Length: 579
Image (cartoon, rainbow, N blue to C red; front, side):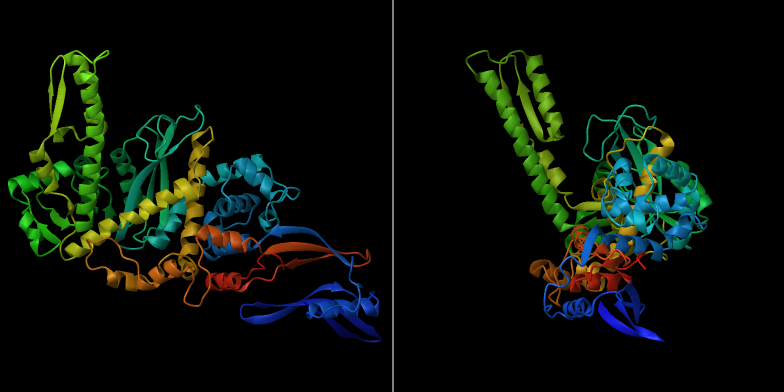
């Protein structure tokens, strides 16, 4: 800011408080206040302060008052990115209050995940938690307005997802698909049901949702199912979505072995002419080894090989050996065996104690069976039970047979050899980790829980809003990677990976960044959440002069070097929506 004296024809020069800023590479100026009515001494004092010089006296004391400061920088970053991505036009080409409310909920879920009640409170003028409500002009909304906007969004979900698919799944491409669950609050929504919990919350009603993503992990479509829906059951609707709604002519559907089962491939995927990549289950791998189709000597000099088996006619099987997975499986098995032995020792001690010993063959067997089933390692033990004794021993032959296949997994695919080499099959299947990371973000970073809505449409709209928020987050993290702990040198990371079977490696640049907690330019490194917190210290300030004859004005905090760098990476101005 600076004080400028502007010639005024036929009158004394106008004294203006002005601000210069850079926008789209150009320096611009704007007037904040007219100070012509101020005494010369006060104007001089203000000018000296703005230049970093001490005022000659306390002439400015009480001249201005900051009447409100709203966190703004994180709003400018997230909302600006959403607009760069064209989300407003995807949601609805016609501007409307409903569209603004949907944008407000999507942005709020990135910067401060919370309930609709809390989001509405943070948007309202009187209780604003940030500048978001003011920038989008929704400062007079309440939670009922947000619920109405969710209903409005639900009717547009299919069209929005079609547009995202056209953007990210054009032509022939890999389509990643996976399923997760989220605990549900309340008991009235028909979607809430007891099922297999994938989020670790047991004994609660839940929903199941399936996410379609591009090969890079960009979310494209999401569908919500009842909480007791099995993973394979969700495949048919996704196949129809990809083939019919998205109109993709050549698709490779990538899914895990629990979802793309033999029945689903036979009944849903093959009839639609889709190619696919999945993995064999452990019993199927054991049978390949037992029948001689999988020779363990294949891995003496290589870590992947293509094999065939009459059990899978017309399919390609890619056998992989991961030494890191081998070590981890051995460690985990030993840990489970040790923990099971500790529980079995308690049963043996209960049978041998002098006071109230455990008696009865059936009673002892029930307790032993419960222990052996708990960690699913019963096959590795032999037990002897009488009416008054219990003993056990490790079945070393069983342990050795299982250990022989440690680190080995087999992928199966219908993709012809000319379209995808074995290493490409492995890399494509490993891309499912991108979807798994998306689910972790859904259930943690974006706080898909708790789900408190009572109707099916509201629950589906709630989950879809989270997908839109994650879509924004994904692109922001990609653009801000140089400032985050994220690896921003993918080419070097790929070069450091000795084999597609080996675990993903981080680039030397990313390792150095993580160790030093600074970039090579000595800029502090952030997580995505901490960077948003840093950007939130850029405030939109309302300043009121003490002289009632002078108008108030708005002033945005000058960003720090790190904050300016973040906005440069995003290609945005920190003054978004304040001009």
